Length: 268
Ligand SMILES: Nc1ncnc2c1ncn2[C@@H]1O[C@H](COP(=O)(O)OP(=O)(O)OP(=O)(O)O)[C@@H](O)[C@H]1O
Image (tube, rainbow, N blue to C red; front, top):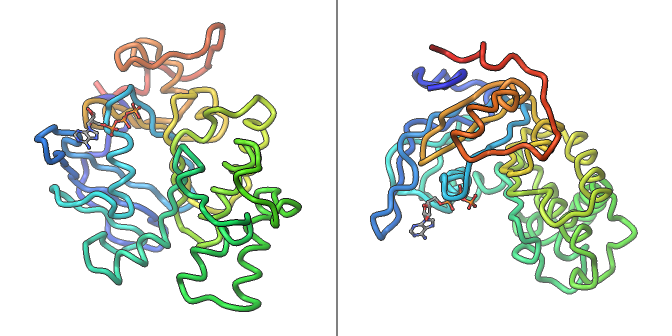
């Protein structure tokens, strides 16, 4: 085990604790074991990068955070509420944990941007001025106000990703989970999205293969490999440990160097 890997018992539920994942194991119906006992604690307001090679279990873990996947061992708690199959609980969990999937087209399906952003809060029962304010604020937060009456399918990929973020922000989530937020963005769009994400007052968990993006946005990073968290440390320390990165098929871009405490942060 490397870094500050969390093997401690679950801390008591507190307002400062946004997410707690305890002993989560999961096998797909075909018997493939994807998660092998994941423990993870995220204090409110932290920004965390979830790194790991293809097939490590990152998406499987993310899908446990709002109950899309369940049924294995262990528990997931969001702001003190345990994820389970109860309908009322699931609805509240899905409000608290907003997931922005890699492909924005998975989240945009209505004729206009504003309607897509209104869809979630309208389902929560919001109407009138309150609903309008949710839409306006969410579009403002991602810099898409001027596009509110356009058809999502006429927007660029980068614009659609911003709208997908807005659809989640309109739900006032406690935790924003992003799957590969920088993929397919040009350098300017990548930088602009980073500025938006940095300014959001939410707990953020970001799955990414873009290690410089993880460094830019997240103070803390985890490596998940073969269904287990194998490192949990300040992002700079973790990315400075080139041996560790190589062990888990992670690579920094050519010429990119990180100053960190590697490998002194390792627990022997
Ligand atoms: N529906 C499924 N049925 C069976 N096995 C699956 C299913 N979905 C994923 N897996 C397996 O579970 C493991 C974890 O997959 P997962 O998609 O969570 O990895 P990942 O870390 O998100 O990978 P990537 O970086 O490629 O997106 C993989 O070995 C994968 O083959």
